[in-house]
Length: 224
Ligand code: AP5
Image 1 (spheres, helix red, strand yellow):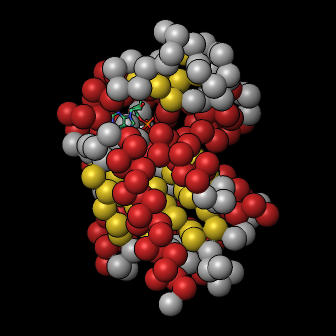
Image 2: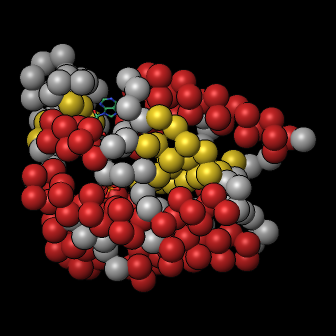
């Protein structure tokens, strides 16, 4: 079967993490989130984590050289050799160029970029109500996807907290950064015929159905 090298992108709070959790269960593809990797580094107080924290707390992007090195190394792991789903990378044109270069250097390429499209007003509602478990980062929403017991993760029983960068003033900056630095990637992947748009305003299960249908079509196209 041909490999699927997918990029999941969209504004903060579009539902990338929510969808990735479901896709990971449905497809035999490793899910690679630069946001999760960075949060792991911050938690473990690594050198990278110490450098990244100030940018993350402010809702700014972590510098390209740090991200390209971290993601590039992760993509060389054995589990990513037959396909992957990237979440939150690339996020700038420079990162997209570095990814293209790394993949083409080993005869590979991006199969498709899946844009989960959600307007700013929805993003603000979603991020301000999001809660995350301290143990494994499972996501909930106080209104749209509440846990069975308030403040407790359904999957591992750990405590649910609000992310530091989900404060209102930081959300505003994350949206600004997305529109200025990440949105130009839509044109980049459109020009290559790789962009697929998903309406992210639908309930999570419907968004998942749409993404699964897109992936099924891609598999057929790659087989041709
Ligand atoms: P990152 O962790 O990647 O954050 P993000 O892109 O801002 O995305 P989020 O994780 O906030 O949202 P999401 O789209 O995953 O939404 P979710 O599924 O949680 O990055 C964090 C920081 O790291 C960045 O700000 C930056 O500093 C740094 N960074 C990371 N990658 C970088 C890179 N490549 N370059 C430079 N810096 C980088 O859903 C949100 C909420 O909505 C949840 O509560 C969920 O339950 C709910 N929800 C989800 N889907 C639906 C739905 N369909 N309907 C209703 N509610 C829904």
